[in-house]
Image 1: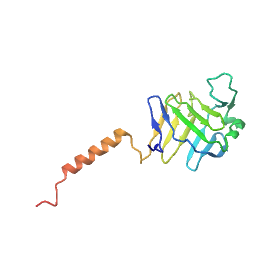
Image 2: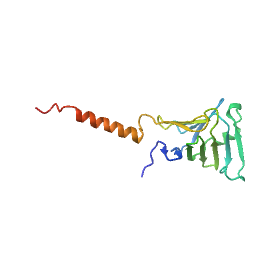
Image 3: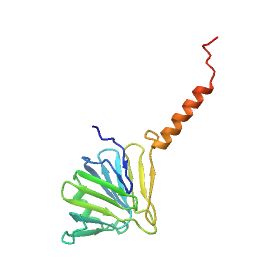
Image 4: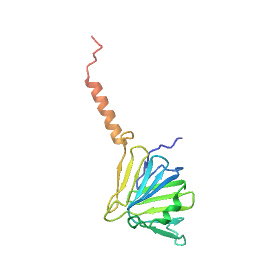
Length: 167
């Protein structure tokens, strides 16, 4: 079974299908920008943490990453790393796990957009202030409700047209 290239929605999270993509570029201004492959971008704008292993284990060391102060040295070790998993939680957090054992954890921020992920294609997911996600699906991957509405419109339009080939 093939895995779709676009994110997969679950009750409490979106699975971002970035598995296998390499971090090919890291940019720093007031944000930390990670380019994955050629067309996926993850931008961190608020404090985050880089850890060796999950943050839930207090024995795993972690380092703060604060893009607005360009305090992102710990993130430079992500260059060339391969993504093993990327999860956008509907509470606004982002967790990425890499083949190097490093984890990037970006919590939601109460007053600004903590992070955003763009791609593949026209997909965009943004962590909204206060926690929550905004998701733009792109025109090529409609939601199931949108697809059903479109199908219904086509059926209704087709049934309403007279058949011009009949005499």
